[in-house]
Length: 137
Image 1 (cartoon, rainbow, N blue to C red):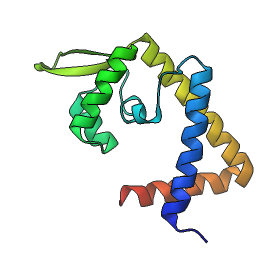
Image 2: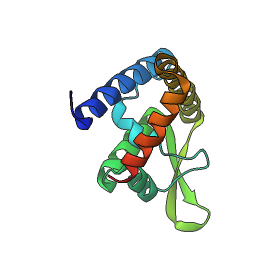
Image 3: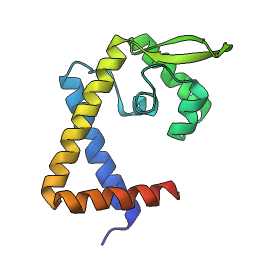
Image 4: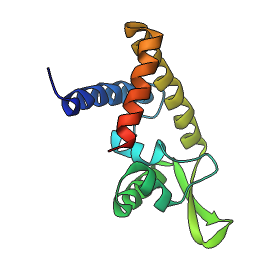
């Protein structure tokens, strides 16, 4: 039987492939899985780059590069943080908010299909255990 790392990689790979294929079909064909380090963690009201780095586990330089790319693609803008004018918030644009809504719908569809495959109760328990384990890593 494959180890947890291999199983996790297979689940993640298949999940990402379906998510980004369906996002492309929904009009977000320029997004790549690497952009998830920003788009999966950004709040609709905006998030500081340092928070995105912390939430995603990516280095600040990587996040900065991804924000630059997403800004060029029209998914985010940088705006002054009202709480600290020296800081910037990364704020999703209309396209960014649409992508976020589409991603939530697609993720929900994927999870529903997986739950149907193994049963709602088993899938809920799997998610709980998986989350518990992931928090400890």
